[in-house]
Length: 91
Image (tube, rainbow, N blue to C red):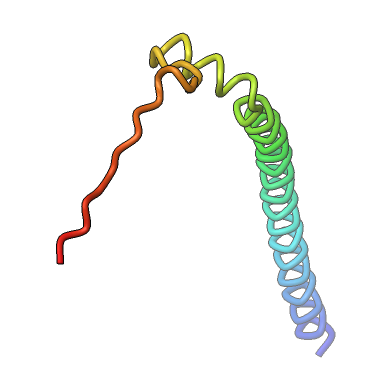
């Protein structure tokens, strides 16, 4: 009877040890996954900040006007350059 009890207790000890090893492995795996997600979140935060800065820079009126003048050859409209069209109403 004592031998059987010792074998049963030994088996329970082995199962318990394997369960502990498995739970520690899962905890480490989840911790690594959380750290990767945190790193990715920080990278997205930096990228979002950079995009907001770019949007504010490129959206300024002076920048748009400078690009329109330099790259597109656009100029301000003056009364001398304005052409007026008249339309005839046909009945």
